[in-house]
Length: 307
View 1 (cartoon, helix red, strand yellow):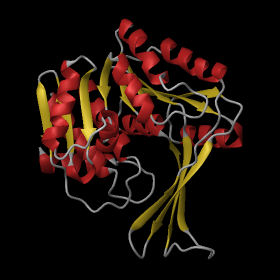
View 2 (tube, rainbow, N blue to C red):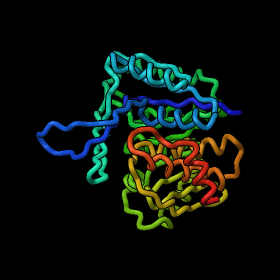
View 3 (cartoon, rainbow, N blue to C red):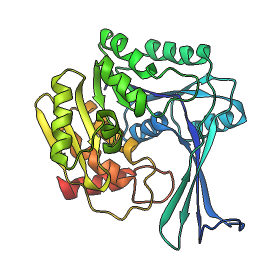
């Protein structure tokens, strides 16, 4: 079975809790606190690990919070390679308000990363024996916008598959470089890249297919929240209108989608089945509050409903 290396340049300790009501100035008592490894690549690695895919998480880690992140990953049994940095790993907070069902998410910008530190992670990526590399999440301060894009050509030359889930200037640089196996923007991130609104799934599909035809990526998956997802590939396009569910949390839904899709492709599933697995995984992630990501039993149940 193919192996996966996930790259996380701006990881976090994701803390989550519940409160009856969130209001200004008052002391807010919380309940049900939990702490999970977070950041795009680490989230994808956690999902792949649950699906039984061989995966190693490569990430930047620093300070006392970095040591806690390392401990959380070890507790989860996730194979890891931490690249030390001098600044500290960020901590995020998600608060679920019971009285309204709203979720409040507080996400720091993260550390300032020096060039020798990000070059060390790049070297670890190229030295990894993994056949797949999933580069996911935001770029911290100190990194060039084209960091993910710099991986594309060398990995292609090694006959390895690069999956990218990012946004803004980093996403634009990746499309400019091409050579990606899979790009996974959200519809908002895709619209920002294109510089125009996409009014319906048909327009999303048309734009994604044009980029695939131009050789920017072998596949482009665009997630659209409760409206479903689109997957453009060389053989055509797949569209799913989404699975209706009451969202308790949106944390990690896109990462769960990526984990589900990569799992299906590695298992040799038909692309239609892998796409459904991704949709089910993304939906499963929103069924529970907090930062737990998709649960395999929920994914299996949803797959039976939509297959």
